[in-house]
Image (cartoon, rainbow, N blue to C red; front, top):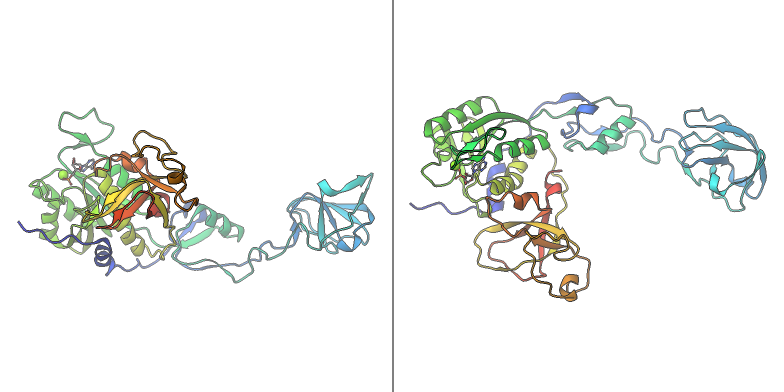
Length: 428
Ligand code: AMP
Ligand code: MG
């Protein structure tokens, strides 16, 4: 049987994403429920922040013109008090966050104040504005604080709250139907599997990934390896979701029924990618519902979810292209350049090769200071692969900080620069 050529990742992504447009509509949510959701509209500042000049320190509100003087302390202003006015040639006791009284233009921190009875001595050098947080220094009315398409993070929720908002408009949740396939699978929480059977790890892992991306997962359970069961499950999934994701059953074995079921119920538009791990990735539609078939091997399912399913989901969620950190690290491994697939190695990142220890990491024997510092003596991080990079070894992913990308056909010497994608960034 001749097999179609493998699609390089950029080609696969282009095919996968070409017809994907953002979901219409929006939903207004209480701030406390909005973390992880995608902002539907630009958020403009409705307040100057801070709303008034206030003290950045516990100390004394003064006027810089009184430098070198001895002044009576005539007022006390705590956080929450109104600002009032500072009398001429006087100081006010003030605390962090309290509004600066009119007439004052600086704060003397209490550690620098010489106090005698009810008087303080002001040092000779006082800078106007010192230890004062100016009105509007964080933002001014009308400034854009957050752009539509951003996935809300906890700090964004804090900033919206500081603007007095209790609700925020977000994009609707994407409904993703998830099904795992495999007659060998039993669900976690049940008795230890009989010989020949294993626990289903992909399904809970993918439900968690979907949750992390702010999707509403429709759990379709596990499907036995038969043509009829697979077709029935896919048909049902298509009726209730914006996207179907399956795992397993997309390879070339006789027990792999997903591909033919998709072809029977719709169309397969992409199959097999030049990525390791993850070759049997599939994409198409079931009826009118988009379909993504992830490989069954758990490390492959995880990596292809991040590299392909995630971008699809984010585009459909209306998420703007997010700025993700990709950077270079030094390879603590070698490759001879014969690989025909782009490889995504599960690596730890560390300041020195092998510093994170771990017997399971493929650290070369210590080769001395030069190697661990890198040729230029720089502070580059080293990417050390988990020793067993098999696509079935989920520990390679749980142990990893990042995926290190080695393009097909590229030889790698130890110490060469390779691109790394931190896992936390991919899921941010
Ligand atoms: P498949 O792609 O269905 O041929 O599966 C490839 C390998 O991944 C086989 O060893 C399966 O037992 C394993 N596998 C498939 N699905 C799962 C799953 N949901 N959880 C754990 N292992 C799986
Ligand atoms: Mg299978």
